[in-house]
Length: 261
Image (cartoon, rainbow, N blue to C red; front, side, top):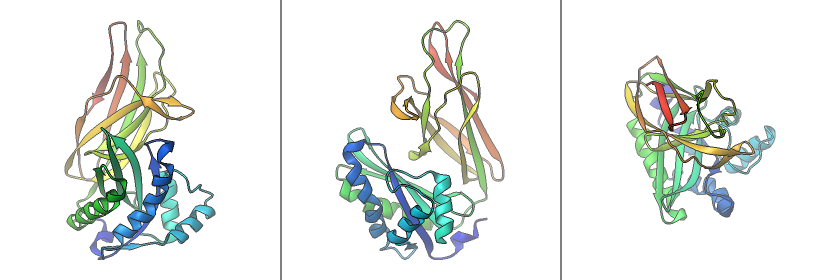
């Protein structure tokens, strides 16, 4: 049981946003953390840490105030600030709409407390909508079930008769429609690589969407032509669910095969 959620106010640090929409939107993305702090501060459930203190923490850990922050680094910053939780977010454009994803993570356990997103045609309206949804989910989650864990592994599997080049992969993960992060590049073949490790509420079923892309200079470059289907997983309290899948290449076709679900 996470006793943190029994208290009324969550001491929260809003981190820099990850920009998935391209350099054209750098200025807008840089402004989003302050906008989201303003939107969240209207709710008594959240006590927001000042940006000046967060910037000081970034300097202390030698983290650049540009682009998203690694979850592990964010937890270190949050603990240094004395925050109960940190908010990690991403800005993207999906099907012609602006989208802002966010997840609030417990700094002590690494567990995702709540996750939500907002989308629309005006960037300036996204923070208010997102803040409202985060608050609603936070209130709903006061009684938190025992946590479970999810590990996702992937392998590039060129068959004996496969043809063509085996490209490196990089993967974006969406859980129940909310963006949870981007994997490290997968640069080896015939070797399992852990893409993600999440701590989630147990006793629930989740829909996973794994979006594959090409790699350039160690980062996401563009969408892969072949994509795996969405899958559903059940997270049991106190247990770890392992999902393993591979990209199998052959003369006939290339396809994703899930070895375990």
